[in-house]
Length: 377
Image (cartoon, rainbow, N blue to C red; front, top):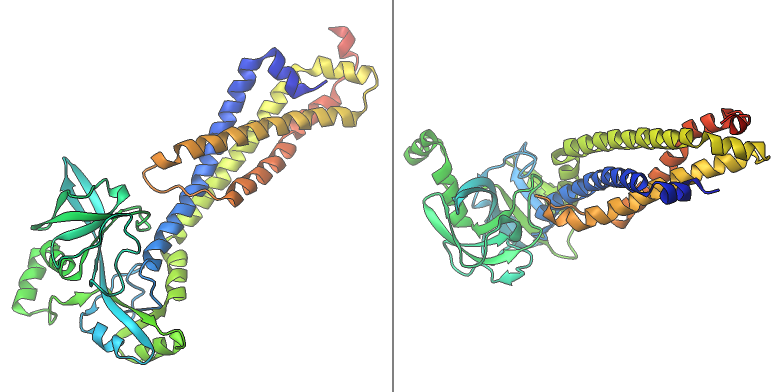
């Protein structure tokens, strides 16, 4: 007697509906795992794209991602002259909302110096920026296509190239423009009072400020040694690439990681309760058949095996269909959902344990049934 097979044979609709509900639950769990992976990957892609070894930012700041950072533009020349530095470039980051085609686009603007580190890693369609002004390279998720023009501040930029998987930790697609255009845009979007003060020189700063200077170090040079040299300059701080990535994971995406982890825990608890209730209900409906088994001398381990088998079958079908569902729809999510084989395998192991534990209620009811029930009707 196979309880799972009996349910499929005698009540196919209910069994399929039950499996569908579990599949949707599993799909949500997998989606949360994929969203977290995508969040971390997007955050790290931004910092890895320039292929930098060293990040020079404002002293006392953990910029340019965890905190805002503003340093003089001429810092790049000073960093480039350091022993062991092979190349350096200035870079800016800002989030901008722009009206386009009757909707509002939220973009993460990266301004970089052409021919220096900081630009797009690989242009998958079109070309890179060739002109000094008013050209842009956009991420595909922005919905922009080559040849379209978008207004940023008082200027219009033509999209000349597209990249993939270039988004910040908030899911905003990246738009690359030249550093000079980015600095102009920052000035145009600054509050009016700040622009007046800057024009009068009251702030003591010029418009030539950047968020960070990124540097590449020779293969035979010590990155930590170069970083220590930069930190000796009182107005600057320096982080290696490894330190910057660790900061992003610990600071920028840490709260989202903990929140998603808590939500995953709640979902798995709900899954365990749902599976337990389903198995208990199905077992209670088969008490007469179980009593018959006990009456003809079936040992308890046989009955326990049947119930656990049914529980595992439900969990396996729910996991399989949930995985197929999320793989089919993950590209339609507003931000990247990145599933890895280890995620699916980990969930399979968790579901196996949950199913075995959740079958406890059904097993308890089955073992307490009186064999005389089979005769009493």
